[in-house]
Image (cartoon, rainbow, N blue to C red; front, top):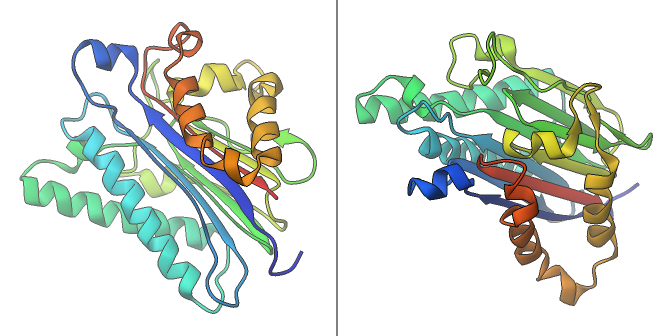
Length: 256
């Protein structure tokens, strides 16, 4: 696969019914983009962050995390070449932590008040890297069907997880590299987790993903503009809200 490799992407976040009912904004944030620097291969990046409900600035933390990851990615994409491995994941997380700790210092609060989870997928024609701190999930197809290479992380107790602002965040960071571009990819916050995964076996729930990937891979240029609206309608649908009252984020990509 040469310079022509590229992806079609769509991503969205929607407030959960528990937040809407109390007038709270959505505390999830996401990013899905394909960068094509002049004369270079395309770079896919997907990032998802879920602000901690117990953190005063959790939603802002999630937004800042996504912005920092996107800026880190754009700097990398501008380089002649870069490797997709553990070092990349650690550098990305350290960059995000620096932004969150700086925001906390400015607000005169502990970094914990900007706590959020963080999930990332980066892919080029040479390979793919996934990385994760906290719950939510990443599903990829590298050529062997849908797989969940990193088990969603829960903390010591139910409804507990790990956050990028935690002291041991870099130790908790899980990353997984592949030597091929990703054919299909999805990242989602824990609001979607029970719909998207078979939790007992930690496998992808194929019927959940099949319609999304089909639409993404077959969409015409005209339909492409409507993908975002269709995803938001799904995230706000009764069928989804009956299953979860949490904020919901889903970001998807298909190699085209």
